[in-house]
Length: 356
Image (cartoon, rainbow, N blue to C red):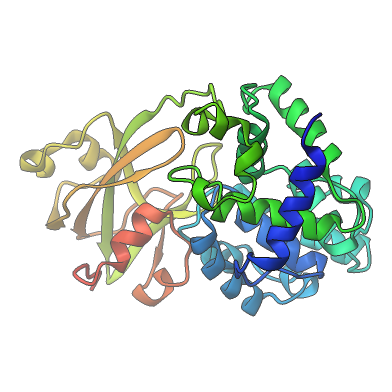
């Protein structure tokens, strides 16, 4: 393919002379820390990810400490970051490495790839950054740079596209310094070849960039995926009895698995505020007619990849205990230690909200 040498050489020169992007994991050679950073950055903006990374490493500086952590500790640190299956896989993999591999992170790409929660992208990143092995990293930044520079309209979200860009990225890889090259390419996509308003006038690749020459920068890369979004309404009953609140752990194969929540009634639309004291669903779940509604919050929303969750919090005081076995009581201090979905955590963080 034409311009491959120009592309790679120019990229590395830009990295040496102009790339000043700073991140706490950049230049890291510890596979554990690279692994943590890459898992955090899945579906997460770098700026947000840095805050979580720093807190996570401070709490769990190595595999041994992470493997000994409780599920609640890990999930609480992850609170608000989303995609909580990552937490489950982190714990499982840390325990496996600590117990089955004597705490030693695998140093071969094929072995890294077998670890739970690690796919080709993360395995390539760990192999190249930690062990200087020749595996190209292919993230959103790399897809975009390659598609634009070479003018390729193959959709990046198709099987054909993923295979094509994987082969192209591997063919361009600097085998002598794969880690440095991979980082340079990702940084270039983040700093220069940005998704919106790319800095084409400052780009050292501009004279041979096909997308720029053909005025297709905004049209590339091609992504044919259309996300349909399901809408759900969560009526949360913040049920209090004897100065304690009822909560439960979500265990089903739905969103927010292993996180905690208040007593829930899910409906298509919000419950009628004017008829809460006579609402049949509320009476059924509380199993008592005599209760006091102390406060009804405004509606708040959380947008997920495929769902829009709207919620409202109805504070209720009971005269006798709640009898549903899946809900249990916690005091106001214990609530602060439990991991909640962002919807609930954001509500609890509101300075105007009081559970007392």
